[in-house]
Image (cartoon, rainbow, N blue to C red; front, side, top):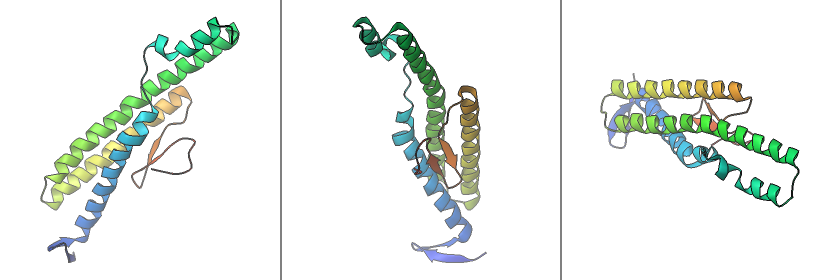
Length: 158
């Protein structure tokens, strides 16, 4: 195993690979918290969810059939968001815990353990998101191999 001088210390290629993976995971956790989670707000109050529709219906802006269809659509979307949101939150909080543990470690073996925990977390999140996607028949965000989020209906990754 070769080692190089980096930032005043000798490190191995394995340590550099794990460090880069941990940095990518940190960026992914940050994007999950700052960008992905706000896309899936949890609104459980039906009155709040359809307040504007109810006013429009009472004012005669839409027919009863259109009102019912729109309310059902919003309720379905709200249930979907309520299913995806906690998965993203779980990834964020679990990822933060693992990264905090990794920041205090000194040996390469311990860093590898954190790396494998992050990989297991990523697989678990993708599995749960795929389950929700199948259950609701909608597209969900996906964590791709390079620790980036692939958002539905968007061409770029985070």
